[in-house]
Length: 549
Image (cartoon, rainbow, N blue to C red; front, side, top):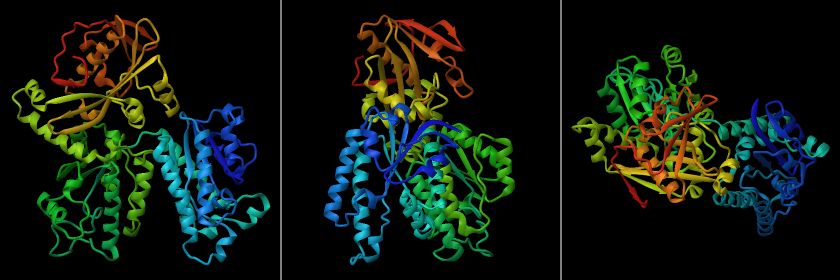
């Protein structure tokens, strides 16, 4: 059962859906329906006493507009709803608001075929603007759910007239599933890498056998099924999913197809790592994990071979290994399911959209490290620059770093958007967020720390860094920036916490290396302390831009 408290509010009867949700999650039971704004605007309502962390608003567009079907007047009514909602919403709550599907009896006699789309567009435009203004507002794909079911299967006139229940039983089950899917996305940890086979996976047939059986990849029949699969994967890559190839082939034959086939959608530059050889695929996956500096639990492995999938399941159980469809016609749909299950995120940040470019830059850094005469020389040649950024302006990325980082994470605390909002406003917390750049480009917002300054001796309660920048002594520069900042605020000592987990062993000795002394051990957590300014000798080659040095 999901732990997070959830509410489902609506302007129509959703009691059956709420009852279904109760089997899986702690959910608020609204007092009637049709007063979703009144519930949100009343601080004394039972909704606020319940304390929902995530609230879903499922809105029937025709009812919300009072069946006003003239677009200009409908736009004014929708604008009033959005204005009222903004006045009632809380920064600490995540809201999922349904997009529009107009279902009403008047539609049967619309003289202009575009009226339905125009009214739906009014809602969609306002909803997108709302989500753009507020980082805690998400758009729930209600319309897509209705379209997949079909209007005749999704709605029930009998249930509507009996109890103001617009959705059929089947649609309510789908809606319940959609809400649970979004909750898992909101609070889960997405995978990062999709590792793909080539033959009979990205294309039909075998590379290198063109004289006998040409590769199946085209604009018709089975070839189109493979091409559409690649189109789905390309869109995933553009949304931040890292792609890798793990394929048993002659490299020259496979690369020739990747580079030259006229219907190939995914070209070599789309992939963050490529292994085309005859080695066991589990060895190749482990090599790629090391190359990308990612844990194997960040991988999804997709291969048409039952034997290869079983090998990964048995030898690398942390990786996800979805089934492969028997019919090529189902490939694109199966990949869509994989994206929603393993890779979907509540919000796409600028960091997500730059993933492949950033990892390609990392490959250049790796080559520089191989050619540098020493580790220190490598760090000098990187020309690393550390920039401190405003965490309040980057709350979504801050949340990603704190909630999704495992290896370089001193305490592995997780935070809801509500908790982050409260900490950003608190004068008892000092939150640090850093961008790292070097000669090869922008690594992005890749490090964060939180200091509790409510006591005489402040405590670094959280310190995380993306795996992309680990191993370059950047943490030394960050700690010195934090130490200097807190000393300037009048503090004479500083503590840091390390809470061991199965995944954060790489930072087990961080505070020892930083020159802190072990002060106490409480409930398995190690508490370290230093005086300010710290006089520990720390070797690093990082320029701190815009900071006092």
